[in-house]
Image (cartoon, rainbow, N blue to C red; front, side):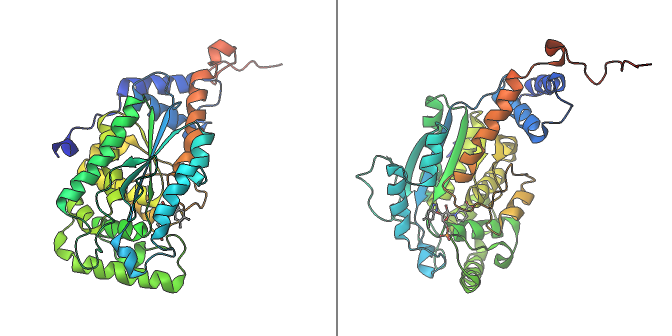
Amino acid sequence: MDWLQHPIPQPDQRYKLTAIKRQEQLTKPAGSLGDLEDLAIRLAALQATNMPSVDKVWISIFAADHGIANAGVSAFPQAVTAEMVKNFVHGGAAISVLAKQHQAHLEIVDVGVASSLTELNIIHQKIALGTANFLTQPAMTEKQLLLALQAGKDAVTRALADNSDLFIAGDMGIANTSSATAIACRLLNINAQHLTGAGTGLDHSGIRHKVKIIQQALNKHASAGDLPLSVLQHFGGFEIAALTGAYLAAAQQRTPILVDGFICSVAALIATRINADIKPWLIFAHKSQEQGHQLILQALQAKALLNLNMRLGEASGAAVAIPLLRSACALHKQMATFAQAQVSDSNSKQTKSL
Ligand SMILES: O=C(O)c1ccc[n+]([C@@H]2O[C@H](COP(=O)([O-])O)[C@@H](O)[C@H]2O)c1
Ligand SMILES: Cc1cc2nc[nH]c2cc1C
């Protein structure tokens, strides 16, 4: 698995400078398009082009189950993971609607759903029938971890073969906020109490129980240390490992990444711990309502584009941000410059009327 350590290129500074200059020349007061200007400049540098575009968007949803679901940490039963995968395929899920609305390619990858999905038209890379319960043992073996990371890389290979100019990944897995929370607690050295949230909708006593379980697991695996791959192996899940592998592979291959909510941001955090050079390739779409997301974003020194109180996962928060990226690119490309439109710029002499 030496590919994990492959270098990640820096964004292209020449295209960045050219894009900054162009933004200064467009017919608007300097900086008035705010974060949309930064987005266009970032995308120009990442895509190494004068005119960035996000016309071809690729979305991979990684689905898997979690042994920790047995500990009663989710408001929903484990069966929902498989049921939602069917819903994705049949077009009824939020991400199905959003992918269609934005003409994005949507694929579902089964990396560890507990029930058989062989009849479905999805990518079949099932590693096991869910992770082991990390309360009692490591969530996965080292071999399983490597397979899950590879499944993420494989998704990027398909995205690039399709000439995608933006990569989005999403997660589906009942109990995966417990997995993601435990990982973040260990990587950031924070107690479970400060990071644990409601996930799919636990009430106060449900959250108290979830905190207890996650803290117990953190104590049990104290000797696992805080190296990112060890933490991932101990706390899971297969879809989080696939997200991590996908993000690293996308950045290695110069593809900008639009990151979804809490679970995806934890995968992004793991990826930055494996190779900090990934940072500029990660565009954070939204701040999830999940309690710990703000702390993860802070740790990554990242500002999310949107704050819509969403907490769905399945790449939905990233998908709703696609039009923002498209607007940023369209403005950058199509607005007239002051010279072209013969509009006086801020340096022009004021004509004094007597
Ligand atoms: O990404 C988020 O911000 C997010 C926040 C809360 C819940 N989810 C989704 O809900 C599921 C996990 O929630 P839970 O309560 O079962 O741990 C999983 O399928 C996630 O995609 C996702
Ligand atoms: C219904 C449902 C849909 C989801 N989509 C992503 N995670 C989810 C969790 C639940 C429970």
